[in-house]
Length: 225
Image 1 (cartoon, helix red, strand yellow):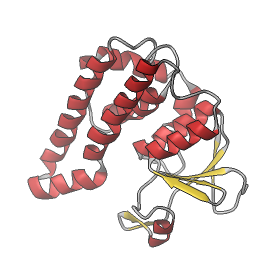
Image 2: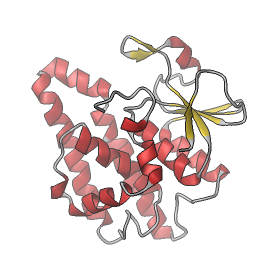
Image 3: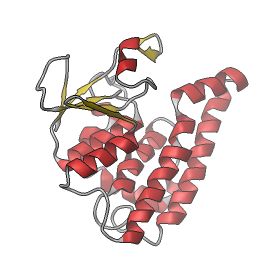
């Protein structure tokens, strides 16, 4: 396992990932770091009430995870972090050389990062529950996940192999794996409706890099995560 929990000290040359065990955005970055074999430390920002504490705003003014610290440089947002890692660490590339498959990787990643995950975020689901009642929260989340999964199942049917765009794990998979995992574990989505995505999910579960990145295996995760 490439990650170690940090209490504030540690190796100054090692990457530091600010994350939270339940964050699927953090999970994407952990998965990519593991695939590339990059050693890193992991730290959960101080939580004040239901928000990260004010000190963390100095790291990421948006107050969201993940954020990656590389020496005196900080980059936040999982997409930006992944592109930074891809440029700096060429081992196990996250993008194929084929131009069309590269475009499909970006498209699939964007469906998740722009059209699914933000709408299942805790702040959004809490707002839906407050405005429309707690029963509406799950329906809202499932509706947006299913819409995105419909699109992904259709988009990838002509490109998928063992994984999203062939037989290697690429950027699309780094986004898909945590999203499918969250859909199953947190939002009770029946993946039998999506045989292609389910096949990929079963393949991801065989990867040590995937297993070590998953929420239930992170510091701070409850026993029933």
